[in-house]
Image (cartoon, rainbow, N blue to C red; front, side):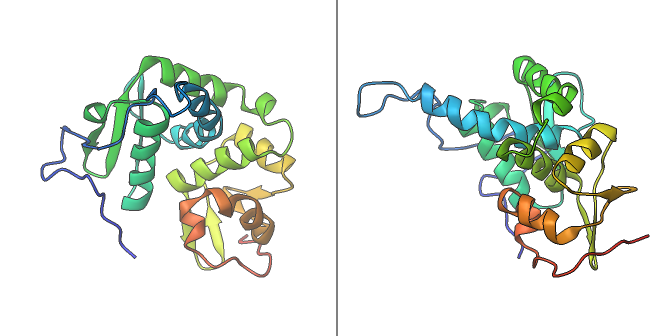
Length: 200
């Protein structure tokens, strides 16, 4: 099912992303600001964005994805605005790509990617979210197979989950879906496979 970006501009190239999202630090009924809740949510979502960032080839200090899926781009924009605190007018859409510039966030994402084998030393929700970001940014689905853009560090993170790969292909698909599907939009639209497959 094709989902249109709810706030997509009529002329997307170089345009800004419009949103009615409230600011990150809005007051709450208790009188406290919502920054603590946002920090907790950021801890979960930042790893998903880090996984997406692995495939991004944009300019320095830019964070983004290129995807034909409007739903995945919508999710990226919502996380950027509502969780990362990026102003909606800073979100840029060019063709199938959506991105923004933010040096602090870009450096944080690069630290996660650089240290991922230490951060994800054992299976965890954070590790699953990281891999889900890779899936949504790079996953190619074919009959009974899924291929990802992986490097040695990503392969090691997957191995620690008990997920085996060969030339980017996921070998034990049912285990992979069980762990990653709850966090991936791409996998959520696919029926969980019932058996394993070695595409080679």
